[in-house]
Length: 118
Image 1 (tube, helix red, strand yellow):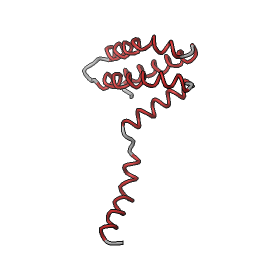
Image 2 (cartoon, helix red, strand yellow):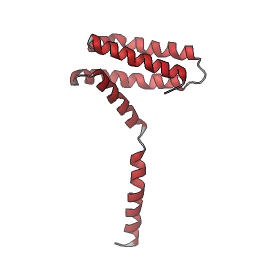
Image 3 (cartoon, one colour):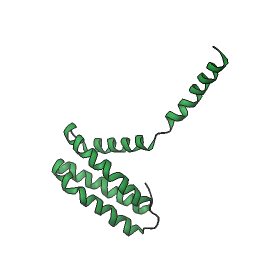
Image 4 (cartoon, one colour):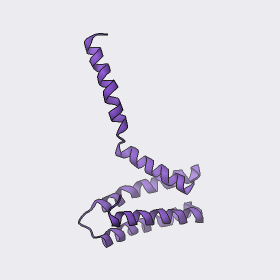
């Protein structure tokens, strides 16, 4: 092995674990969506319909959570408005028990946003 190859090998050995240990925001979002999917016990058909809705909702909610110019009440109202926009779609896809569980998950997300925990 020449010196150049050794340097490349060392860089790969020492650099890759650092890169792999830091989840990208896309990986974090995917993990969050998967967690919700599991909590709701979605069927594959439901998952195919629900996850795009939640993926679209996520950045909007996150933007509100991160907006320090909004009061807690404004954050709560704006996040509820986003949820109300997608509620008819979600209600049509989910069973009553799953929908109720989603409402609980959303309420917790609102509480976290209002309290400054994300």
